[in-house]
Image (cartoon, rainbow, N blue to C red):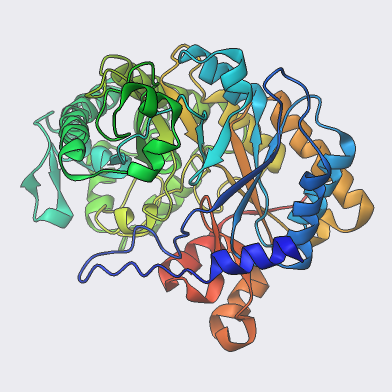
Length: 487
């Protein structure tokens, strides 16, 4: 009862995000009272305790959207705790989201943390992690639209949504490209140009922040700020770790598009570049045969090396760019995949793409495959994601993964054991994060049609859960289109 009273008090705070004339990048957004359970103590022992189980029980008995609940899992997490996590996930509210020490702790060590600091991390925001009294607050990151960069690579730096103005640099007419490497090089040049401006923007935001923003209460609670007599925003704070970041959006869309170009135009020669570009410019109108070729080209999320290798190349490109740049306070910039809901409005400025996606539809979200294309089951999806990870660089951070499972696939005690095995596998594969929607497509469609009957239907959106009927139709449709896996 005490816990549930606390949750209710948090939920009474309602923040209204109103930006007239702008798309929603934070649909159903949370206000981030975050709770972390499980994980390890500073000396590396399992940190599960009675309160961990009580919080999970409270979420099952009192399914409110606040606070956000995160569970840390590691190789020695007790089966009893993992079972309780799975029983809570099966309630279908999206709680808890799960983080894996086997990936996150080594990452923090590589960035300069001590073992004690890394073992004691907590979850903030969607999938970010912080070390108490060591991390300094990072300036909000840039969202990099991979679909837009690809469009510029295929149109000599121009975008249709902006009246074909020259936005990127000139990389030539792709009709003259002799091989896939020419397409990839054009994309890399456009990406480097965009990232140069992204890093300038980040630097300016870092330096302007200290002039206009102060956080005295936060700073009083941070040991390093008190020791250095500085506000948390007035960096650099001595001995603090500064971990900046930027998010790349539309990862799956880009992988599938480049795979389609490579396969259909250059390897199998089923299309010419001119035919493909003509179909894209027409938004596939009157070009359904070409669209079907694109839809049936290799897809990320199915443990297909043809597509997954391209994904690894993309991460390596952006991690290498991040490696060569620093924040205004000397910290590193990490490449992340945390879309919140920006993949919907960012898709609204991107024309048709070679993966078969039509103009202005949502891009793929976070690290997840494009909606509905991962058809080989959850293990194949996980393997694809693992295949794209470029471990040669430490400038990598959160990889947010949404998975949808059918309720029947996790029903009963056997279903819980299957979900436990899945989480153990993800831990063994050293992934950052996973969160689940346990729901049937038919339920979501019914909620769209009769919202009054489904006011309490919670779904996992990005790093937070929200009431489905409160979301915009565009985001509702995107969640409906996500693949519903079964075992």
